[in-house]
Length: 200
Image (cartoon, rainbow, N blue to C red; front, side, top):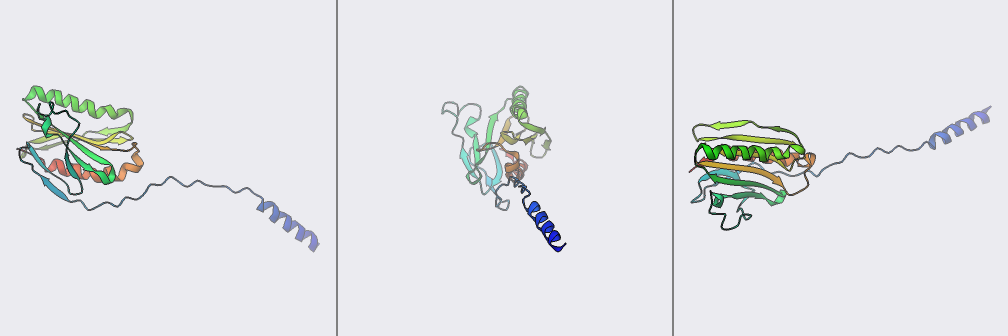
């Protein structure tokens, strides 16, 4: 009897040990990014029609995509970028001189179209307006969700003479999950830029 029990126990253990192992794949992870404390520097270059505070860990560069003969037209000479090479990110800032309501309507339509180009890849687009009557800075902040090429865009204007448009881009394949920490971090810097924007 003992022999039968022992053989039965050994057989059960042998059968259970032959059960195939089930492997569970690890979820995809992303590298943690060490982010600095938000800190700002004033951009107030002589001759420019605007000023604002930008992140001190960014670098202001003149936009080099325009040909020299275009740079004198309609304020294009004041196009700049805020570069973040450590994160492959850039805030493009384009400025236009306006001549009242006629120019404003066209620029507002352009801003809407440029932002909604991303609807093919976007999960959503929020469009909160902002208004600061004391500084005459009014505009729309576009928060674009999903795997769109640009997660944040905005325009600011005094509705008469000045118009500034901004867009945040990363020089990588859009991936909302991996870029989310950087988008949230730089969104706060863009909001600060808008709050400190002043026309000259």
